[in-house]
Structure formats: C-alpha cells, structure tokens
Image (cartoon, rainbow, N blue to C red; front, side, top):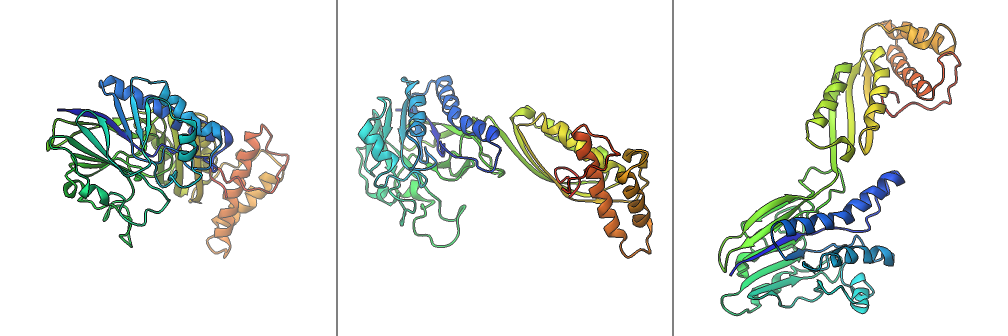
Length: 395
C-alpha cells in the first residue's frame, strides 16, 4: 500500500498587506490565491490526487463572502484532486466562523472540511487523524487525542495539525504546543503541520510545509510545499520540497563606501536567479559616501524601483565622507549653489564645532537636488518644499 499527497498550509487568503501601496497589495493578495493553481500543477505533475492543507486557509474568519469563496472556486476547478482542509488559528472553527458558513453553504464535491478531531478515511487503507483548531489558542496539545485513536491493523496513519511544536519556534508555557514526538507516540506514518511559515523538518515523520507564497521579509524558507510518499505502514516517508512561490522577498543591510557598491547590490539581486519584477526588496544602506556620490543613490534607487515589484530603501544612515564636491551639480548660481558653497566650506573646516552638522546639511541638500531633478526642475530656482529627500540618500 502506498499513499502520495501534497502537504501545504498557511494560505491565509484575504491577507490585506496594508503596509504596501494599493497596487502592490492587490498583486500580493492575488499571488496567494494563485498559489492554489501552482499546488494543483505540482500534484498533477506527480500523479497525485490528494492535497492536505494543515490550517489557515483563510487569514481571518471574518472576511467578505467573495473572499471566502475564492479558494473554494479555485479548488473546485481541479475536480480530479481531493482537497482536505482543517481550521488553523487564523480561521479557527468557532461559532460564526467561515467553517460554519461553509457547512451551511456546502463545499465543492472535491473539498473536504474536517472541523472535528475524529478519524477520516481519506483513501482506501489510509486513515487521516485531523487536529482542527476550534479557537485561536488551542489551550492544550491538539494532537494529544491521536495517541488513543485506534485504527485497523495495516492501515496508514497520517496526522494533520496546526500549531507550534514544543522546543521549536515558541517559548514559554508548553500548554497548547504540539509534542515533537507525537508521530512516534501516536504511531503516525506522517504528521503534516501548519503554522510555521517556512518549510521545516522536525523529524523524519514530522514536517511543516510552510506557506506556499511568501508574505513577509523573513528568511525562513517560505514559498514551498511538500510532495510526500509513504510506501507502506512503518516505512519512512519520502519528502520532496517543491518551490511554489511567485514573489521573492529580499531584506538586506549593506555597507557602502562608493557608487560601485550600489552596482554590487544590484548584481547580487540579479544573481538570485529570479526576475527582478518578482522581487520585493527592503534595503538598509549604511556607511559613508563622497558628497558627489550621494546624488547617485537617488538615481540608482529610481532605476531599481522601476524594475522590482516593490522597493523600500532606507539610506538615512549613510553619512558624508571626505572628498571634493563638484559644485557645478548645483548650477552656476542661485540659492542651492550658495548654500552648497557655505556648507562645503564649513564641513571641510575641522576646527569648526559644527562641521558635522554642515556635512549632514550638505547631504540633505544633495537630496533636495535629486528631488528637484526627479521632477524635471532646474537647480537655480531654489524650489524647496522643506521636505528631506529621504527615499535614497538624504534625510
């Protein structure tokens, strides 16, 4: 007897992404929904007919009806696949939840919603032991009941649960945490877990699949699902990691000392092997640049922002290093030119107690110049709205 399936979790359909521009947020929401199509493609490519979803199908149990039904419609589009779902902490099966509405409305024929901890024969000779969450906080280990759940001899026992494992990813009170040895204690051939958003092996029979689509700047290997095959009772499962994510989230803090370092950052991004338009990038720049190079941060940032899906670049910690500045950057005359000349003189005077303040002012002035140029304005108008150009190098 053999059983193969896709193990996934933490879809969190309906996640709002409020910290992003509306255009980007909409695309991120759409990518989470489209992950269902990629999971279906992975199952089809491997000849699998079952997808087990270990909780948090929805981001909340209080979503518009349209959003609630979107993943159901996607799963229904693949009638050859059987999708088995349990509630997680985000979409717990409490009174008035999405699961109650789903029961009243009726799920698609190929979707099974398990909202009670009881045995379910998911395939001939394969018993599923679900541990659905009935509240956001389990209160006790939701998999505890599996130890005493009797099944016929010779069948496969597969657990499906959502929560933190004792000793991994959680500190403090162990109540409600899943026993890391549950698979062994309950005689499970495999325990499919959800809640941790990165793919993680707890032991040979216990895995977190992670979320199929990354949703934050956390380097914990998100954007995957697992293809699992159990050859027979007692056999160690084979687990294949499958890349399912569309977007890649990159977060880095980088020291820079000249304009060449900016080119290096971009080369490193391209070397990841993912198209830049599938990247969300958060950069923190530190170090010092010559005054004339501060303007290049703005131009470089604008160019990179035009290629990636989203860019957040904080260069407020970039200081001004020594070096001559080409005052012609500020035009032949006007307020910017006169201010630049004054600040340059003070910044270069080591005896001046306000030399560092002058250097910071020069940095801000270069940012104002970049802001004016980005608007298509000249350098002699003195048009300063009083805002620091904080997007790239001035703050």
